[in-house]
Amino acid sequence: ENKISSGVGNSMVRFARTHGSKLRVKMTDADIPIFKDLPLHVRVQLHRQIYAPVLRAHPALCSLKDITMDSICHLACTNTHYLAGQTIFEKGDVAYRMIHVRSGELSYYQTWRREPWSVSAGTTVSEVALWRRWTHVGWLIARTSNEVTSIDCARFNDIMAESVHHGVDISGIRGYARLLTAYFESKPALTDLWTYDAHIGSMAERTLPTVVQHSESREIRKSRFSRHTTRLTR
Image (tube, rainbow, N blue to C red; front, side):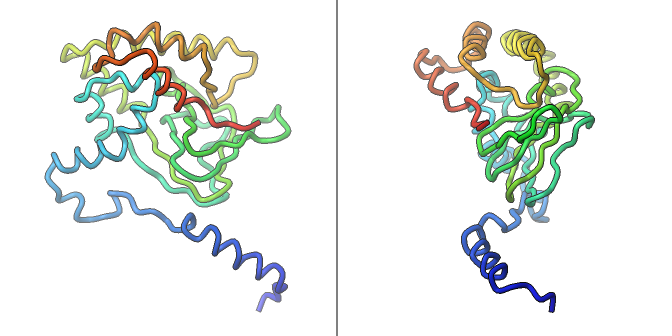
């Protein structure tokens, strides 16, 4: 009816065959009515299995005690699916969440840069919003169908405050946040993409040893940090 050429039509078919599994919209627990009727402890366990791997891969959040991590997983974390072309955030938006890319490809644009950064699975975006008030300084747009995990900053900070009220020591996390924020604010160009490097690894090593809940060798900590290093390609 629209007189699409056979070449374009064949390209669409090939794309659908190659990327069909990525185009399916994934359901979350919020989309399943019966989920709300599950016992609380079952929902907490499910959220722990879904979201704890994201927290444990982070150089600082991996040090959270189990009870605090469970609260963050259950109350502050959500998964969201975006289709290609959708905007995740725009420059000038108030940042309210840290984003971890679980799958797919996204593009991050800034006005001073001609080409966008490629953001792939495993990358963390807008971590700064966990530690201080932040307004996005660029645009994050889905290049392909993707799924991200979001940590709501307000809920995260409420949970951390409640943990302190119950005697949990988060001095290491606070020290890491102060050092990390000062380090990136010293950069000549602000960005929502915080590139983790050896210097950030040393910050985590200096500030977090006293709050790590499991004894770990330096080699294990370095291996965990290495897995968390950014997957940005310029």
